[in-house]
Length: 143
Figure 1 (cartoon, rainbow, N blue to C red):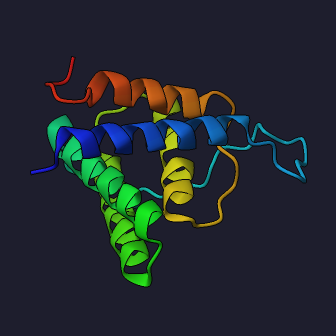
Figure 2: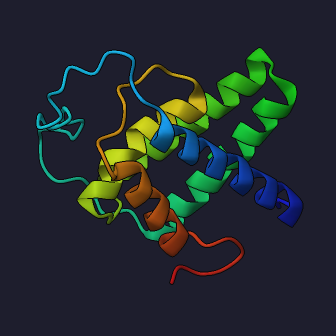
Figure 3: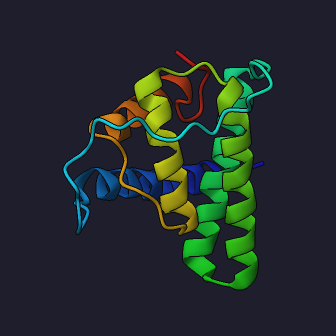
């Protein structure tokens, strides 16, 4: 079981990442923010619904793996956080989530696992952070 100290540390690290993603300005913005992000949803039909608690559990695993990677910075810890991030992204299409929050999810996870990504659409990082705060509160059931 993940200790409350590790969860608190992971939450603090993730909050810092969210702030960094929100405040980050791309070096070469082309001014066209009206284009929708490319769809990563399967084209064969709607995904199965994923319970919020399953998504939150996967997100907590990613947070713990990210905290471990920040502390250890090894190839193994990078592989662990990458695998956990990919698991979160795999659950996302079926997770009930507001569209603005969904738009912030992939850039957020990409930032956590260190993968280059386009900047999050305006407001989506805040929307995703708000979704997490409401859906996955630390140490409690979703609100």
